[in-house]
Image (cartoon, rainbow, N blue to C red; front, top):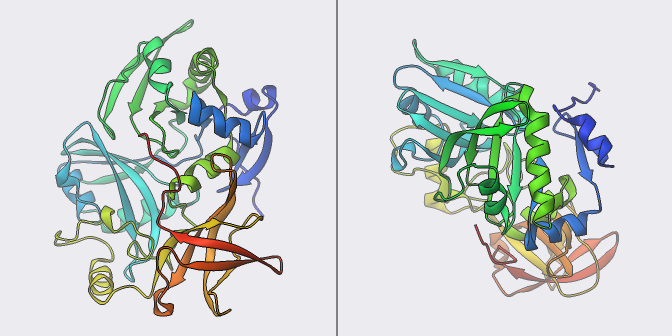
Length: 368
């Protein structure tokens, strides 16, 4: 097993009392004050996450945007420069190699943020089909990523002179004034929590002082640093897919309810034929939410059974919801079973049947 990689501010996480765990090949802070407290801070005030483990890649050269649009699922033609877009890199069978954010800088430059463990695979897939003049460069360790999330997140950025008054999924390049000088940052109004928030991308070398400046302001508005634990409970409450759970090379966008991130009318993208066929025929399974009505906490891998005891699916994620105060799960359910919203099912949690209601995510209201 390869050694876990450290991000650019591991020393700060240690100083803040973080607990750590491996994720995507990186040593990640799981929590500081505790997952529930950090989750609540994001829902009510603000939290800051170090997600520098996320990949970064640059696609550049004449016609770079058109090239990306011919490979990734979503339609870049629907947005203009200065906007970002959620998209997918699929294989030829329609499975998802990765889900990522594409920043459209201009017709000749697209900046990509894939998941940590999949960065090299995504870069290789694009490089393999890139025409002459188009370069795809892995920039994984050139930039850090800090997510400032919560209803008071705009105050945090504004207090530092950073742009906050922008549309959802818009981004801007700015300068952050620090005691040691200025640092260039890219600011995008997006996130993974369901709250209004931003992702701030400084240079890897500037990560420490940029994090310090952001954290100071987050604390001033009643927030705190947040780790991987809160990131997972927050995204699960929103029903947001996590690659390796709700998305994988064996799980398609149609099955995972992210068909909205597919440009169905585009003439070309990875996996197009398979996805069009699945959409036309209808998927054999689909992602649902499960809201526990009994006491217990579902986990990924738990079997889902219908009222008659028939196995109809499996949980892809499960957790205790700090907002709702009960267990929730995401699950791929077999549509041949006739399962639908409002049905009662059970989850096998270590041999005990946990009663649940089938729902359509999100579990809580979005405030993005």
